[in-house]
Length: 402
Image (tube, rainbow, N blue to C red; front, side, top):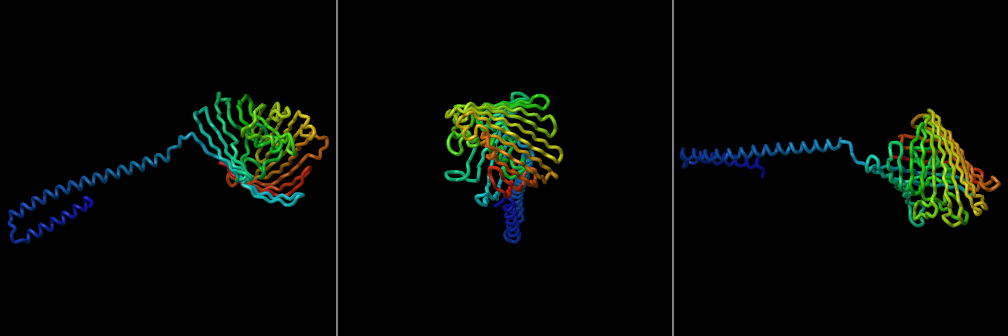
């Protein structure tokens, strides 16, 4: 029973007692006066209880208000966490008809999560974990891959170093390949088959900003390990070890120089050498050279890239894979922040060392991107394959990043 309820019950009881006493014949005036005095003492005690109870209620209300204020204040205060989370993903529908028939497929091509942390203002960690083709495991089409995991440290305001697993500084797409950042459903086949994007290795790197819009990147890292037999021998893309118990008998060395002083323009060239891309099997030295330009002026955009591998190996000479090269050009037009159109022409040859040119593959794509939000994109393009391949059809895609 609460104190207030107890007070009510007591007062009612007092009224009953007093009333009974008044109407009782035996009670004298002196007795009645004594009874009233006793009841007065009890009333004073009860009033004190009520006052104390009121103070407790007010104190409780004050505590509640203070708690609410503290919570509201906590919500509005900016987070001081140095840990960040991001990611991207893309779903593709491909409908391509070639000489073998109609090929239709739908695939959640990539689901990627970024995790970063700043230990201090000058030391940070960045990582990227990816699930390809939605499902991995024995006999499944996909893989779980750790594409990046490195420590980055500022040396001064103009330079830094990084150590761990990182993307190699070559080409246009290898370091920047989130779906809202490029036209077309699929990544271009030249950077895929020649460079080969996406390409990451383990090592140590240095980056510096120079004067007048120039910058430089250099890295020492693990290298390729291409197969030496069968239909995939010396194919560059099949040499990626992905830093999974990778053989490191022969390291690779990569350098890039970039110019960005003119607004909207990026021009860069990269060069890589590796003493043996078979990791001790055939002693096949190799070098990669890439050059690209990206230019955006108002609504107009243009991308162009050239890449070439030279491999010094008699075994590679036989298949013509001692030289592998490709290029593409991609003009585009942005109507506004939401709509953009493009056309791209790709040509590449993984057997460019052969005297005949019938091993060159070509591909053209043209289509549209729609961005309902700057980090969300819907894509459609028509594809036509020719040269040492055939096929035509269309692709649909949706992608995001955050």
